[in-house]
Image (cartoon, each protein chain N blue to C red):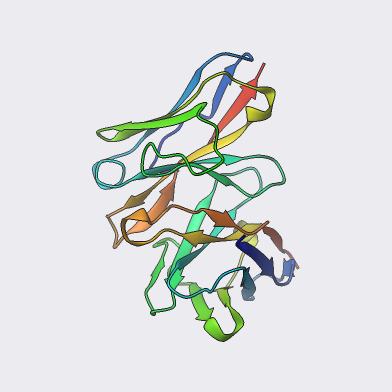
Length: 111
Length: 120
């Protein structure tokens, strides 16, 4: 069971805005950066958001991240069929001498 | 453009040791942190551990007793050894470049992944 909690699924229609949430605690999200990854079938995960709300070069501005307290969210606006993928949040956790935690993942379906 | 490539056996017998290597192309392995991450079939991502060529190493506490990550600067490679494997260790194993200092968990470059099956 992941210490970072994500809903197992989310859905939306093309053009809609969808938000995926990630809940943690004071030892991880509450005191460290949050990262978001997009994982398409058969491909390596792709970094979408780093340092809570920063986009790497090449990631469309349809993707945005935010963090408040011990929770974070990833918003996707102008939903497209190619956005259908698994999305994972990640954060460093300061407990147990430290390690990287991933959320359980959210399967996004574009209806 | 930085590229990473995993290599190693795709089949390992139960109780034996899983060994993988990750070769880095396009930049020196020095001065960065490098991680191993895995994904069991139908499950989510799990961080295994990281290494820096300075000797800094950190492992996932849940795997710490069975894992060794090493770096080989002369070959621009780092490697993973996981001992006493069981079927639960069957997964796609990824190598990735990790972030510096407070950016641990920022995996900006990944290998394509390699499936390792544990079976007799």
